[in-house]
Amino acid sequence: MADSAAKHETDELYQKAKRAKSDNENGGGEVGKEIECGNILSEFKTTKVLSDSAREKNIFIHGKLADQDAVIILEKTPIREDTLAELFAGSTLKLEMKNDIYSTYRLQALPQLNEIKTTVVCPATEKHIKKYQRQESFLVEETGADYQSITLPYIQKQSFSVQWVYNILEKKAEADRIVFEDPDPTVGFLLLPDFKWDQKQVDDLYLIAITLQRGIRSLRDLTQEHLPLLQNIFQKGKEAILQRYQLPASKLRVYLHYQPSYYHLHVHFTKLGYEAPGCGVERAHLLADVIQNLQSDPEYYKTRTLYFPLRVDDGLLSKYKEGGRL
Image 1 (cartoon, helix red, strand yellow):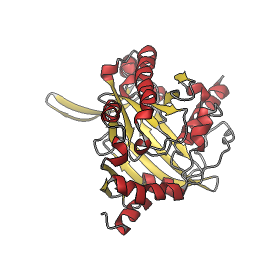
Image 2: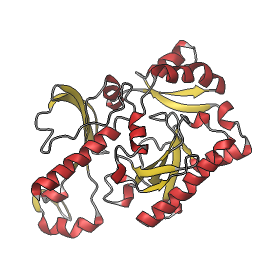
Image 3: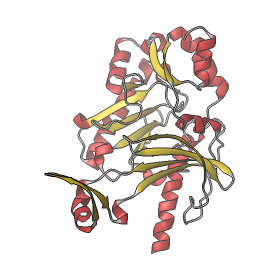
């Protein structure tokens, strides 16, 4: 039983690692092979810490795994209300300081309550390494003309791989993670957990709706003809989350990213109050607003000036600088 549980955990970790390859420029079409059970990190050799956050309680590390570049993401898991009784009764305390009514302790929790969520990206490309490295960002102003002359040619030239998305759509990967499916080829989608969510509590709920229809890269491609697709995702996504997680629509933030991290249309569903990466106003566009904008103007996102952040090492930022737009 112990070996079976360990293999299950490793398999689940591997699926998350594949999901993390969202921006892999050189991704192939083949679903990766199963990783042998056991501690795959025992041979990991650290090269450097890319970034860390005491507030978010995470750290991003670059190193080598079986002679391949890898990025390891370590995140402290949230404290859940349903584990408090076990946490208080089974933990040990070491007093650090006491002053009048105030005292601080080091609490050593039971192993099952002291997990670290671990994501592995391997083999990691230079793009992955740069993605997780702490860097300065700039806000880009993109007109409709800028998109056609700068952004779109850059996207087309880079040929960013979305094969991992097609693997999901074709049920070659992560089929057991699907929460809801609408098989309609025009307005259908798959709803499944984002790899950043451990699915142990709804406080940080994070799901992604991936459209079955291919060829829609981003917000810029949307026109009035896509309204049935967007409305279907909006309505059925909320219904599926209510049924599965008992979370009403009034507790959800439903949005699209621009720029997206991968160029296949997808919609983010997160719990309101959870500060998910990329949910800020400079990148997130509420799906309800997107629908209304397209209802008012069928070509809204073809002509609208959009703003988005780019990191200093992003190739697209270089193109905007070369064009005198930054």
